[in-house]
Length: 108
Image (cartoon, rainbow, N blue to C red; front, side, top):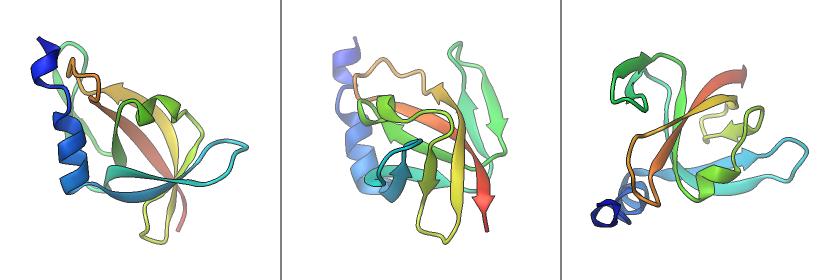
């Protein structure tokens, strides 16, 4: 079943995403593509229930998302830096499914 969804998140990320700078804890900065949002966004949990994430967030596709971890920093190009607090799967069974990262602002 997931095969019909494979590749769709990558296409969406290529169309709607933007380059952000990801700095892993103790590592070198790397540019990745993701969808950064500073405004609240609705997110579904693993059971399909929606909740409102009021913190800034970043959506990144797998497998790139598998490398991001709590405490890593994200610079989306708006002059601010954010730290990853946690992650939420999107609920999609696709191999390139989005992972949503909840962020907190660390610089203004």
